Figure 1: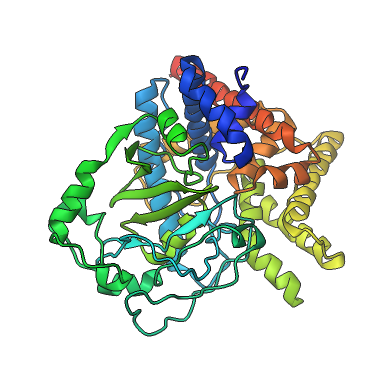
Figure 2 (figure 1 turned 90 degrees about the vertical axis):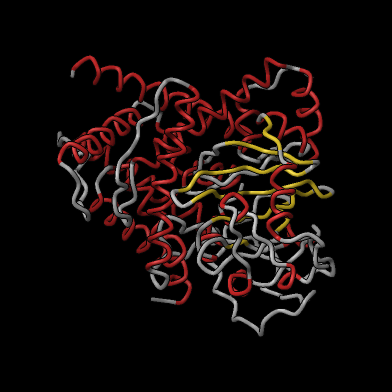
Length: 308
Length: 166
């Protein structure tokens, strides 16, 4: 395969390369250092451009405390843009939470991918302490979700029994053929999770009671340590290759770092209150994602809708 | 307002206003243009609302710009935003100054490139951007690549000029 052009790199980063066309690109990336460098450059430009456009503001939002202009130092760019992104995100999420009854604010066109019942339960998935971390149900993104009306909050059923399934709403056609797994609504998860003492592991809080998975043998803190230790930092191009292309990112945010363990990739975004973690792995033709962070379930739902 | 139109409004109004605000730098003008767009949607409900609404909005911006040039009127491209929170005077100045730099950088882009970038910021995918702007989907990656690179380069030039001037 000849070297892809800049338009292809941007399409790859935007998640717009059809799954059938990913293999030759990722294969080329694995063997071409120059193209990996071009991909990294394209990603940096994309991040900077996103921050600059965000800096133009939103008439519905209060202004951020400060706008940190990008610098020309690459490492400095990521750090400063990540900080600026966290400020913008904090303001955005604050607005979304404060005024739920009004037309959606900064996330107006974001909507959660619609989830369908599946007989398959995911492996240990999120819980969250009521006042710290929430995790959203897992969705599988085969392609970019189409714009949709902001979903109404599903009425909370009784506390989910282990293995209980919840149907939210009918999936759009492009997701129907992809295997989708649902966990109990995040709001229920929020009420039943346990808080961990370890501050790093807090973001990884899991509640096997809510999720119905078999109770792990280790105490939560030790499980979290084990989970934390198994992830290692990786380069962006390696993440793309690991996932067979189609690395999912939260539109509008600049990641702080990427980590991987086995076939699972984590994209970590810095927030003022902690870290937002987008975890993903390839399942057949699709990428299975989950999202967790120190924000409300509503905000996570909005963010999940911005995963591209 | 019909249920359909109310649904369009709920779903797209804020995003439309934000895109228009970023495009024009004028909140009132953005609101006025958005109102005009929805008024036209009420008269002729679109089948594919999102690309249609934003395409009409961008057309109105272009028409408005051409009209202003013909009339010899100088457009106000940037107006200071209302401050909801008290900020130290130097920080407020820095923020407004930086926004102006970003806007000047954005104005250096070709019209289509600028519009593609703003639509992408509103969560449009390539199909939607292509439908809104009347471009081929295969050209969107290149368009965005060019737009992003040009915006960042132009911003860095603006930054360099401000450092020299200060």
